[in-house]
Image 1: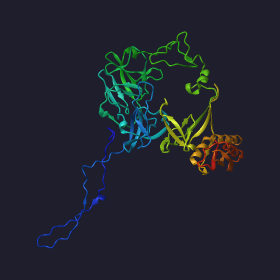
Image 2 (image 1 turned 45 degrees about the vertical axis):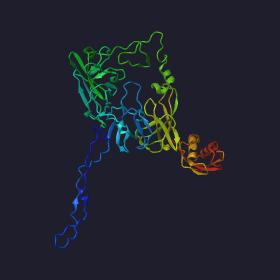
Image 3 (image 1 turned 180 degrees about the vertical axis):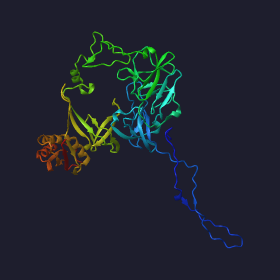
Image 4 (image 1 turned 90 degrees about the horizontal axis):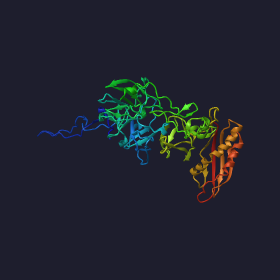
Length: 527
């Protein structure tokens, strides 16, 4: 299917000098009474181009918006994918998710998740949970929404205007257009739409002409009285920045902007001339030096005399202790958490081991990975709501483990300590247990080997090396013996400690009974 308004069919050039085909020799009839003429080949002729031939369509490239509910696939030909979920718990949900189209394969579009540069502006929603990764996936072409291929402006009869940024998705039918966080209804001709677009910088927002303050009885309107929903244009409860004021039939014309929308709306002169926001309400609750933000239409209501404040009169430090460092950004009290990091440039794999993409920005996981065929795998939420996830895997050596300890209230910054790394190398196995089964059990006990190594690091911070441990699994799956076969680690206690730990491990029973002999190397590296 051709991509509307975005793909250009180009002619294919032929190398005529290399496309010469001699014709088949034919007999030339002789005149009556003469000797028959010898058969002679006709002169070579060039192939004529077939006017009915259609040049191949070039692969699609550019940014697009996939509709909410579309299926993304991890390969071009499988039938297992995940559905693009709705992004937020509010009514003005963006119509789709921005993706980068890089080609076509097996009837599907080849896409990459959004990893835009700071100068690029996209007006579809993005998968926030995957913001640190560039993942390659596949999508049906019918799941793309029409988008504006260039900036689009429309002026209404009452002097109001709407200007939309390129890349704004325009759902079919009478659905409203969501530009940034703001909903508008504007007629968009089909010739302004396509399926692919090239991003550009956002609408300028640097030069403010003033601020517009909320007055409930003086709404902003456009298109002869349609009320503009203002909430998406406010920033943190502050006044609404405007970029110009004009006049029309006794009303004020005010120009407002977000990243994807510029709108000139009408309001009363009374609202346009309000010099300052309403004074703070005496009933606003404070935490430390901060304050609750007012709503776009005024401050929060004063609590009744018998109501408790929302935090139960906790002090700033007490709130930090009650809710931890994550929820409020306040100081906690010595909370220790584990962190698992992958660095930019790290290869990302799908669960089956096929390539998924790259890490574009250092990413931290707060839950330990699970082992899958020797790889470290995490369930990554697609959105901040976390209702839908996708599993991303990494080579075990590409995941760094850290301990992060937050200080008590008023203490120094949080302490970050990289946990020593213990890697299991490829084992040698003799017996009726397969290597993958043994590897999974060993990986589940690596923290015990790390404990032994950390004890050695406490004595020698530069300790490192390779320890090879030979152990025997009996017919019941228990380890009957475990010894250090060789070691380059100078502290012998580390290897002996690990061998002693392995003696307590339990494996599946070998098939058909008998013994299984395992030689398992461990690579030990300090932070």
